[in-house]
Length: 139
Image 1: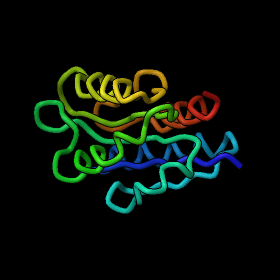
Image 2: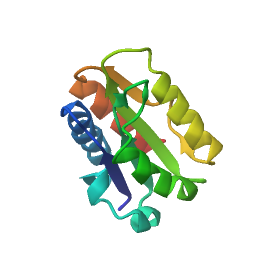
Image 3: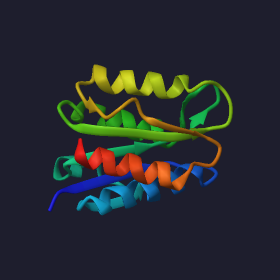
Image 4: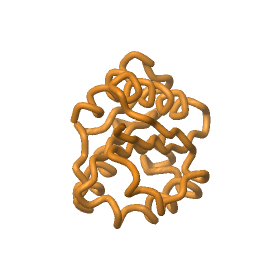
């Protein structure tokens, strides 16, 4: 059975809800899915997964959360080359520049980035997130 990891950081719960819905979409497509916050994920296990979905909201000047998620992501960046990766997150203002920057950062690292990420202004639509997960499973 194919395996996926959905790894996220959430400050208000919006990105956590997105993570659960993305996981549900992957599961509906037959994947075994592990969902966990970035502080609970063992980066040494990346190679065990066929798909990697990362979730983080925009913070401050449209950047990834700086105290927990950014250090975590810097630690896995070098291991993403050739991997199928999906990105998602929520934001409260701006135009999504943080996601465009994140997608480019992953592509520069050699990751096979799915679509151009999924962003939600405030709370996300669960059905949209589930659909994103199911499409990612088929990618």
